[in-house]
Amino acid sequence: DAIDKIAAAPSTLVYTLAWVPPFKGTRPHHSNRNNTFITHQGETITCKIRLLDTVEATAALVKRIAATGVRAIAIHARYVPQRPREPAHLHLLKQVVDLVKDDISIPIIANGDVFTCEDIAKVKDATGCSSVMIARGAMWNASIFNKNLQMLSQWQVGKLFLERAKKYNLAPQGIKYIAMKMFEEHSKSKLFLALSAAKTTAEFECVVFLLL
Image 1: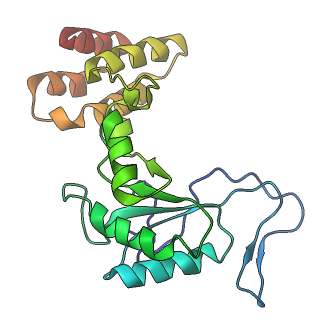
Image 2: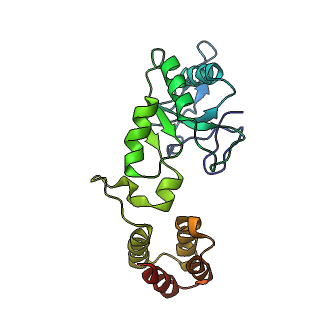
């Protein structure tokens, strides 16, 4: 019950986080001898889970998954029923990492409540994970990945997005979908309503430029 489905958690299904190319030849199979998931050469398979009821149960699941041969495990630091508005339990993730770090060699990726460049280092330090996975923070403001650790405003990112959308002829429907996701935190504002009512690239551009 801890397995996370990307973009629709919680779920009981296993999904890969990395792109897996089409099979060419023998398909992957399970080894009955060592419970190791054997993959076709060149494929990368990872797994993402949520916290179980106890730290010990979560650590046991991590070890079990690691034994299948996945390349990395991401842990969303919330319980299965929890929604994003509830704070992530980073202290519990730290305890899980401490219990498994001597028994597995693959990276453990922290997921939960990373919204700024500074949060990346803070979460890594707080959990002992090798890296972080960013979901809403990246969707709202892609400049979180700036190497100079200087984030732009959402509206500046929106302007850059529109410039590239025009350059590559992104359909208005695609622009609207992405823009609505980017600015969903402002869903009760008049300007957001204007954004949701826009239907053409020019109309989206007018709204975003008004916000700069």
